[in-house]
Each structure stands twice: as structure tokens, then as C-alpha cells.
Image (cartoon, rainbow, N blue to C red; front, side):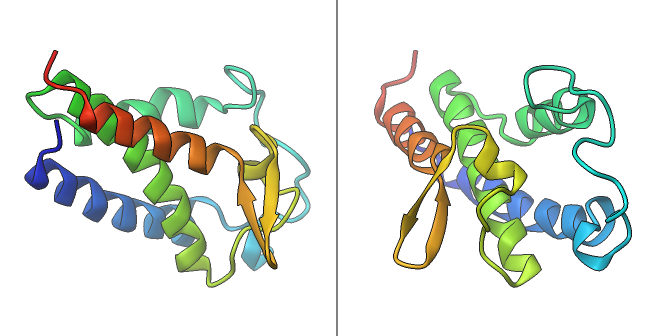
Length: 135
């Protein structure tokens, strides 16, 4: 069940957090960490770093809270998608092949744009969960 207030909170949180992540957390684009290759720390789960598993996911879950369990889960999926998309907006460049976000499930091209394969999957899951009545 779509809830406009929580949706607005999720959109604002995605934009703000993406800006913080670009500006202060991930500075590879500005040569701050170019000498480091791959992960800076051992992944905690699959390709996910401890930062993503133990900080980012719980933060997204808390920000996304709403009364409806299905809308809450949909908000978490939406927040992940919007934060990733907003990150590239803050950066001023779209996704390039081989970047971390394309390594999860691969990517495909639409014209000259590289689209991470998980983006449309995430969007489909989000919309399906918003359409489900409250559980």
C-alpha cells in the first residue's frame, strides 16, 4: 500500500544520503583513494561490504518505516534504487560499465547509458509491493 508521506521521506533521504556518500564517504572520483583497488575491506556478504550490511541496510530500514509491512519493504527497495541513482546525479556522470553497482547482477545498455540490471528488478519489486494490500 503506497503511503505518500513515507514516500516523500524516502525520496528526500535518498537524495541527501547520496550526496553525503558522494561528498564524504566514497571519494574515488577525486583521487582520494585511487591507489586502493577493489574492496577496501573484506566483503561481509557476497559483494556487500560491512559498511553496507551493518550500517547502510539498517539505516535504510529505519528511514523507510511505515505502518504497512509491504509498504515498508517497498520503501527499502525504493530507497536503495533512488540513493544509487541520486549518487550518480551528485557525481554528474551516469554509470560506467565495471562500476560496483554493475557488478551485482551485471548491466545492459540503452543507447549510450549503462543501466545496472538490478535497477529494473528493484523497481518491479517496489511497484509490486506497493500494489499489495496491507498484510
